[in-house]
View (cartoon, rainbow, N blue to C red):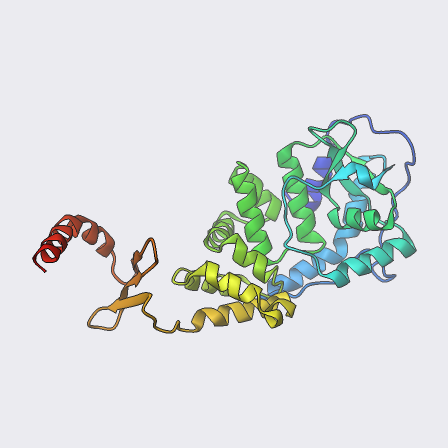
Length: 339
């Protein structure tokens, strides 16, 4: 099912009585007059980027036409009565994008309504399916929000939210990965996630694999990195496995130049930092085999030391050590006793 058909299907479900007052016709957005069409973010993959750009140009008009075809009334709701979706999908919005949207709504009004559902747990309140950016702008301006109110299940909300993000201001690769992980951790089937992100099974598996391989603290430190695609995030995930992530995050978070840089520059800096070989010190010793392959690392700590085996370099060596530990420990005790 196409994104347009999915939206229409969501909006043509069995009608629910809507709040009275302030219904209005939909004004189709004009991409040439400074309306709500956001600036495009550049992503890797020329063919994919071209297709997504063309899709975004037509999406706002398609969305409005779908609402018209569904015959839904548009109502005005106080923005303070609307809460965010239960699924977070963005790592942060560029301030210039938000400022442009606020200025556009201040000058031209809200061109396209948002989609909300009655809050499942709070009477008299609502929850956004899509339109978070328009809601934030309305809150800042102290304006009510033009919205369509629909009864949506959790799955329908997730699909609507994901497809709207893909079409209007597309998520970066890592945002899509973390969004997929978040949805899966909420207990949704992968079919729902594939529909929300408009991806196939193999693509989704890669997204979730990378999303789980990179700690959230690293993603939050770097940010959305809109120009950084899957190959580079995959490379970062692979290199992270042999580094002390906590110390790296703490170090870079306190570097003014790193934090002042844009998100894609922070990604490049973080990846470069992973290539810097740590200086040898007495707290860490590396053991390599005769061919120079790094097999194991011993890290000394005041109360607990760790011995880490590189399973890629020496498969099953860790299991071998576990089996031999009783003999090694007896040898250790005998030597200490005789010494």
